Length: 463
Ligand code: GDP
Ligand code: GDP
Image 1: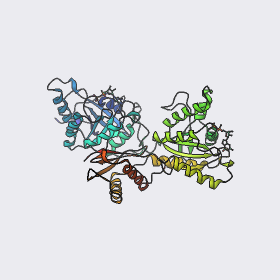
Image 2 (image 1 turned 60 degrees about the horizontal axis):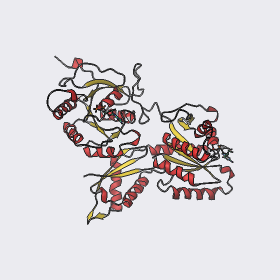
Image 3 (image 1 turned 90 degrees about the vertical axis):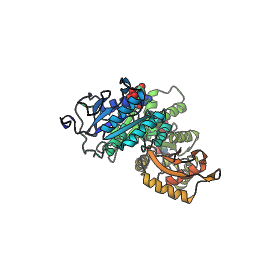
Image 4 (image 1 turned 30 degrees about the vertical axis):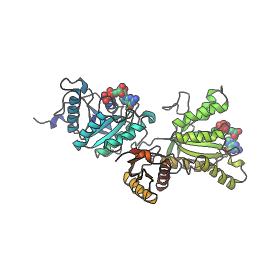
């Protein structure tokens, strides 16, 4: 008897982890509507599910190790262990799932040991990380020794595109040029990261600023004749409006706060309303354009919005509008750039563009700044590059000593983008002064040319 006849050629991917981390939810997310199917793989007990997932047009066979609590013999711990070992043994790739909100538990560590010892390739998945939750848990996950975790939400479908790309890379598969879409299959994992190149996603842009800064005028100038209202996007309320425009082949989805305000029919004061529009717009956007009235620049609300944008981790572009009204253009621009540098010191080199929405000048510079900043925001620096930089930064300016011993920083990696997020592993993370972390952040920003976007840099205790 041969098994080959029954085993599809698709690579086998096992989803493992302790109970309740979301393995079944991830299984369902990846297999979508495809029913569980086909014969058993050799050597596996029955208390797990098989399914087929299609990722960028490639079929994978998934094994879910959830449900093992229902097995009847042995202690739960024994059964879990056995089940996990079997699944890993049958797999070409292991998806090791943890609950990012719960952080790393003793059970996670012991499962991780099994995964490590198997020698199989592992993709470490930090689940339940929707809306940036569970960041600590994501960072903790590094301690499992399974490489950089990928943050996802199986339940909300966030980060699934990234995960799919990592799976494909870990299996050494190529993403086909035209990812075929099964007719009966609507569950192809899709989100806004690392999609196949033939389907670039629009850059989500919001224009925010005080009332009268010229937001509606700018939106109209940008949309021109091709105004095309696309209706509510995920994450927007039902009466929000987004418009899509094409700029030199790059699709831009523009959040129309002005349209929103017209719809709302002004029941609150304009200032208050504009502020809540801004908050919504910032959440939606990848790049936020802070529109400033050149005649009344940088009043309190402008700065509040600017800070908010960087706190939320969005990329920021400052546009100074009504430039047609400014007589001494060069000097004014110099002064305004200085103000931006001083008041938004946490994100050096934010692009500042002078425009006139009414006479439609400076719009090309504005669009280039948006596209460029978006690319920076998405930038990933490789671990070897980071560690070469670290060595240099440490030797230029050594970390201070604490309790008579020099603090050692061993290793830096970038677990995520949007915004660029870095983690340094440090023996005595608590003892390292903030000023030194700031030095590292600035040095990193310069070394890898990351102007105008917030950078997250944190320390983890680690060998
Ligand atoms: P399993 O035991 O590892 O298969 O875990 P399940 O898939 O059964 O999920 C355990 C619990 O976590 C369920 O209540 C799920 O609804 C919940 N869950 C799964 N994925 C997510 C997620 O991405 N976010 C949140 N908040 N909950 C999740
Ligand atoms: P919003 O409240 O931010 O949407 O601002 P509006 O687009 O309604 O513009 C407020 C006022 O500023 C209107 O009277 C516009 O005509 C005027 N405005 C907008 N852009 C410019 C510009 O580039 N130059 C000048 N001179 N006026 C402008």
